[in-house]
Length: 296
Ligand code: NAD
View 1: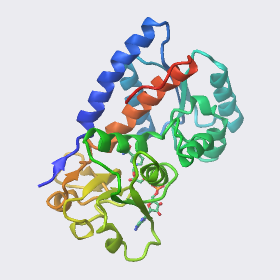
View 2 (view 1 turned 120 degrees about the vertical axis):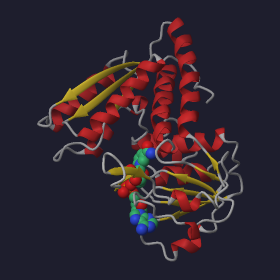
View 3 (view 1 turned 60 degrees about the vertical axis):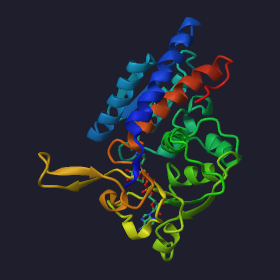
């Protein structure tokens, strides 16, 4: 049986540490503040935004919500973001994606000041990651790294295979794991990879971020591997009251018998993503006040 890496437990530890850091900052007259912009009424986005605001509250970070109607124009949205860029009391800006149809996400990402880009999506921050000098790391990749670090899993010299090459998850994880300090030998797989199982079964560390329920089966995993499941997928399950349940990209029930470490879904990478948004917000407040980043 494998050891479970619990994102619930690790994120709670990080949030506890942040609470103390925020108290110290407040004693210095600095109140970390996150502006959260939501456009439209997508129910999943509303849940994500609610969870982010609640976590801010628990830690003592001020959150300011801007709920805009789905008829908001690109210009109105970007004018709001420019106002937030110029407001010294706001340290971090998050615009919840996906945006309603007709609005351009890339243009919004480019409008957010790289200094306040706590989601780590601006090309300036992605570029710093590529140069091996990360500043804001996007929250899900950052959460994956913290899970490895806080579980004392060494990545140096290990074969890491990343399934998925999205700008949000797969690509930054692969870049970070291959960078100095993490020092893994990284292979990136995607929908055109030949003989995927052959590649994944060489992995000491396997990271699945493709968005296909239970795709990674036991025969794709090397015995004793570390398996990190980023996927969040809803599948039908008539035995549940809701008629469905959440699963990852990994067939957990099969793979847990073979892996040395595995993350569950839910309760794995998901809660880490919000915790790392909080870390980025506190760091934004620190950097904007001339302080060094947290030692997380
Ligand atoms: P995406 O759709 O942008 O990218 C998926 C990637 O998987 C693509 O690069 C594609 O090439 C690759 N892929 C697709 N089919 C494949 C196949 N058969 N074999 C190999 N590779 C294949 O998705 P994303 O935004 O990177 O998200 C991936 C998953 O992670 C989703 O389930 C998403 O819900 C989840 N996610 C979770 C969190 C979290 O907080 N835990 C955050 C972001 C995304």
